[in-house]
Image (cartoon, rainbow, N blue to C red; front, side):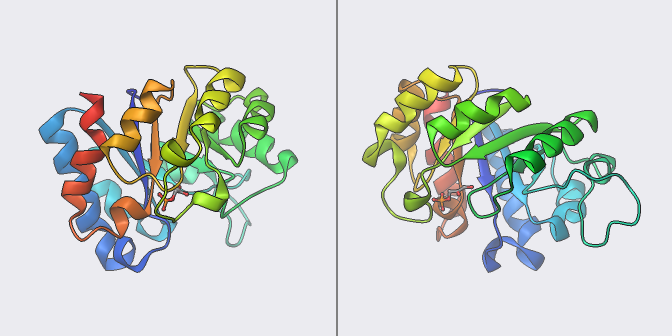
Length: 219
Ligand code: G3P
């Protein structure tokens, strides 16, 4: 994965899932092509196949389970994701938290399947605790700022500083309320390797403009 990275999480917003997922994914692909910068997307499991077929940028799952192919109703095996052309997975997102025991098994199963693994953590301390499970990156997101208008970069820059200090300079993404290039600039200056964003793009009236602004400090 090229760093710095913009990872846009499509979550389960109406405007970024179902019939809208491919169009939004193509906008990300277009910006990545035009700028040569590192942009990836995490899409709903139901949209993975269509999105992977439509774009060249890395496509992530928003979650997966520590299970193999088989009698696993409703579960998402990492090997299945890999077979569909998925690049990586988020795990333990603030909106989809799992126990440490399941997280460890999930990281191992996802890595064994060849996926790039980004574990989310609500605090720098939690991130430092789960780094031993071996993810590729840790995304630290204070839950109270997720989906809001004030970014972690502006409201709680100390969280970025602490994350880099506790987790390691090469491993930290940050997110929550990130909306523009100024937020990205602060995050990078404080040592993060990129940003995890959702509503700043998915709810924007002009997603292309929003993405271009967010990655501007990468250049
Ligand atoms: O996964 C990204 C995330 O939780 C941040 O969401 O809407 O604050 O950018 P948002």
